[in-house]
Length: 161
Image (cartoon, rainbow, N blue to C red; front, side, top):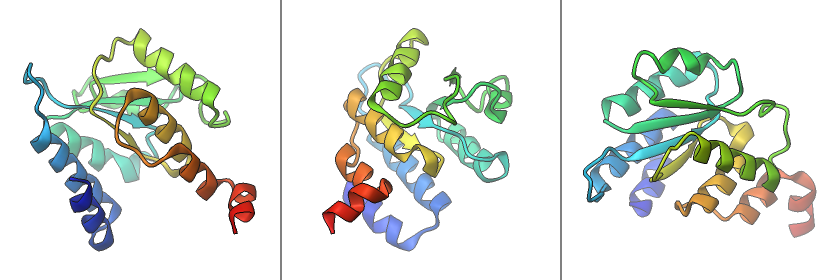
């Protein structure tokens, strides 16, 4: 699956890559209870750029849990059945993407009784590091947290060169 996703990323737009990734996830689900694969989405981006992605995920039968700041537009998709659950994290937009924030998100997911998670997806570039930390804690396939941190924290990237 990862090789196919890597190949797809070289040839497709962000939306096409997301769709391809979700196709692979829905086809590869080997859950014994036959429940829908669960995807935790960190952040939600703007409605104009992200709504179609969430609609596509719902059409593919994925159970979508969104972690976003209180008051996010994504709340309007829950009653429509496009998003299964919204887990709000106060101050998420302003907070540093620390290990502490990742632990807080994990506690909020636990409090929301999300259950088994098959994948973590980052819907907004601001939360790359947080998504990697949460995916790592959930045991989902992700890029190494230190590699993401090196890429996005300029001072660490300078030390590596």
